[in-house]
Length: 489
Ligand SMILES: Cc1cc2nc3c(=O)[nH]c(=O)nc-3n(C[C@H](O)[C@H](O)[C@H](O)COP(=O)(O)OP(=O)(O)OC[C@H]3O[C@@H](n4cnc5c(N)ncnc54)[C@H](O)[C@@H]3O)c2cc1C
Image 1 (tube, rainbow, N blue to C red):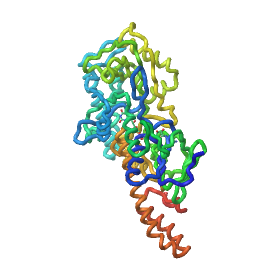
Image 2: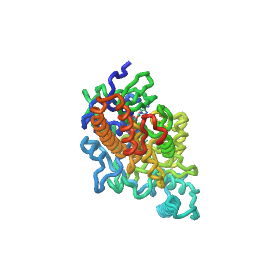
Image 3: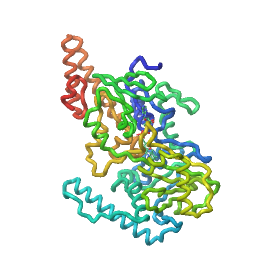
Image 4: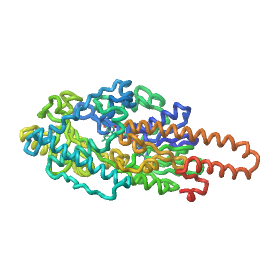
């Protein structure tokens, strides 16, 4: 058993981009005795490539979103430094590539009209929700537009599951620009993480060999006492540290994979329960040859069906990997869960049925299919957080707030960029900086107390009160573990 006998300063749970960026900041600031515990056999988390059809496809994050604005997206900068190959994604024409079930493209006038109607309705609903949440309007009074026809349903899907999944102004676009670039590099998006990890962990021949990164370590239990934390893994190992950073997804926090002693306070669990989790499934299909249009403006196309979200959003991979003959169809939420629970062969038949409706009966069968299962992955349980726009900011603050010596990070803790790779990356940095401050404060408090403690045993009690008092004043949402925690929860 490789349980560590000497405690680490910090244990980081999860080696996705937030966990790695947090660890890097700690290491750069002199916290070398850290330990990263990762449940799977790799680093990267929701940034994950897989070889498929002769190329490398991204099962998780695929785009660097937010490029070309006044500020440089830090992920774009990392990609630039690593020479990562990317290609520009142009969504502007997608509404003019909407196929009906007979394979005809809707005339641009019809598509534009349906699109405008849907956007106007969506804006009206959002305004009403905003007014209701601000208390300036008590209830809805719009004649709410309900999409009914296949084209209306398809547009509703694009708007709400893609374009307007967030509400304007979208911080990512405001801050970093509105362009999006698809990663198309054999080394994968995850290469950025390896580069980052290599900068503070020992590596050999492109592999991380540092003992401070432990793979296949599924954390099941976290026990917190007054000034230390004990972490137990599924294989029976026990690790101790002064502080812990948890970077697992909101889906994992909700799943009870990890138990906490004492239990997390109510304000924390209630906040976690309020966060929506999006499931987003990119299904890859490899063909012997291409039968879809590839000219400019045709990268993305839409299938209009009476069932909302039924194989609606398609993309060809010719811009990213010319000659790869790969199509990607994206399903979300309930449709994602449905295909995750059925055999891939059934999914292939459904997708082929849709493609034959669009491109005719004579197209070839796909030679292979790849269906990621993010919902059923117990180390993810979904793809990314999606806070309702009328979300009270307190929810995210509570999700992010530390509990004693346990700190929380991950994309879902990013106030401005939740859901994105750059959100996760910046959240990791932010959490590490907050922890460094806390470590400094704790150290100073201990230094002050040490001479007093040397004087009499009775002053030991004074130390307990002083430390818990400090925590209570500085960090009102935290609880101290000095025996009076219930009083301040
Ligand atoms: C399908 C999909 C498409 C996406 N598309 C984009 C996109 O195009 N652009 C974009 O910017 N973002 C996109 N995202 C979101 C982006 O991938 C995430 O926001 C980001 O990668 C999250 O990083 P993280 O460090 O917060 O979490 P994670 O990457 O989930 O890292 C958490 C780590 O914790 C580990 N873990 C879980 N439980 C335990 C346990 N009990 N013990 C130990 N370890 C544990 C996990 O294995 C994982 O490695 C997409 C995500 C998905 C899934």
